[in-house]
Length: 292
Image (cartoon, rainbow, N blue to C red):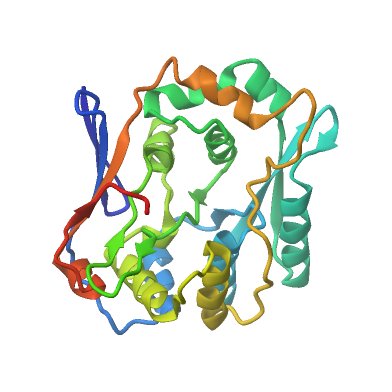
């Protein structure tokens, strides 16, 4: 089976016979001299308002929130509250999300998700199987999108740069995070499934800053803090969280991984890019299928 679609400017392709997910980042015209805020403004100036930014309490979505705040783009922060037997699982995320919204007078919409209902009932499989998604927690992202009312945005990420003296490359992009906009189309919604790599302009900007600020041995969280602080001076350093870290005796998100393997073909992710990213990366390579 071969399947093709786009998320932002990413050209996505699944070939189940080759067991491959290919993400192509093609060349397109852009202005290398634009500021980050100008890029954000241009992406959002003509979309429906208010935009709804899925905000887990993490740095990526906080960067998009902060940019919209500075640019006075109407928005709502949409935060998931994961509940199991009336107890909140994602306490770390909720703390930072509510703290940031209160401090900045940001309107916040809380979506309560009963994880027992979504996962023990097998509903999560119905969300994921048609999109070849193997990570069960992504079902909660789709649930959040489904409960938006205007123009949902997932902050996402830029293709992570594997920095080398010569021939730096981009890390592959996973299929699991590449079908948000396909899901929106099924629900007759419009939105952005990966804001920080929505077009080549923002991708190039963040990859360039990544190359500039990276120090040997930097962890992901440390590098992001350095990058984002140049744009958002009041960002707080914190540990990375997915919201599922608590060890609950009768609920562990990892237990649901195995069930998905019955429905999904194991796909090897591969990424390819055009000449503009080749020039930025100082590389002769145009593709990569290794994470390190």
